[in-house]
Image 1 (tube, rainbow, N blue to C red):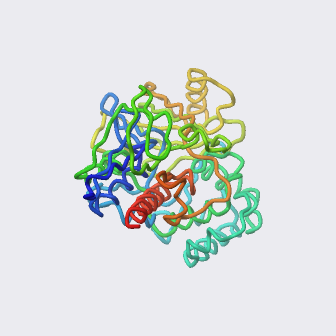
Image 2 (cartoon, rainbow, N blue to C red):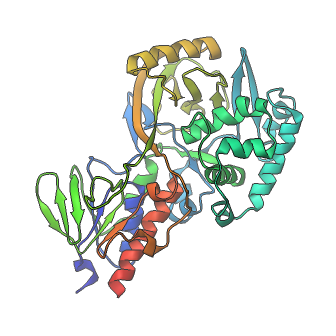
Image 3 (cartoon, helix red, strand yellow):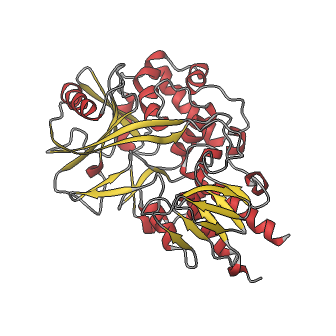
Length: 414
């Protein structure tokens, strides 16, 4: 049988599924992707609303991700870099802190900031140096503890935890208690320290869009939902059955594999609200943090402080809410508006859109960096992929997609 004649299906056109397709194509195969929605990207999507680019949740690309460097063309994405720091709003004052070794403009405000102690600033430098030298494999071999325990053991003060680490990493991990694995903290901190946080000029969906543009022989079936999978066959929601030589499930497999005796995957959720404002209270491309307990706002960012292809004419502000305090959409919006006025002196012109994202990040334990191809095998003809198998990151999505595709290629070679 010719390579192109094998019926290889990939369920899910997220980043993981697209990387699996790309890897199969490079080896001469022509897979078919089954995608439930009308576009690629999975959780990595961007809408254009009234002239503004709205990502589904506040997302960034860490340019040091090894898999991203392998699979993406950064120059074509026209990456716009954040400054390596944050603007912290406390008691009506704005404090800027960051890494002056990577951006000299942050030197003076960081040195003279009273938001963290001198000892904490020394600890941050030591942490930076320690993690720059530490291999990723060593990070994921460490015994897991919570991020909060890790930071306390490193010697950071309660002030540093409450004023910087908790609000900053709560927004990244969608976890207000910093219970996320210390492996993930070390990995992400290392990525921040060795590269930049960035956004493509066209928004985060430019990443999966670039991946799909590279595909030549892959077929994508949009608005098509798989309901169950077994060796040799995929049953669609409409009752149609597709014969399959090999299937890669590049999405949450819990509901697709009836024989999978597994607890349902836990997810972290968030709200992201986009507002139009007349002016910016943070001129530079820095994330704004509100280090206060029992407040809805975790972080905010002016997307118009970066270059964008689409601009509605005024300033675009995103606000991330991690702990919704059991409030609903309209209640969240009103309370966020009040907090913006009270703590940031921001008057919004209007709400453009609110995203409630119940499945923003997988809530995982025993985090891994990568899977060998053999570890992606579920049965003789079914393979699994997705960041849910490793850790909640774009890097993990890419690596798992590649491993699953290589496993299929290896199975075919035998």
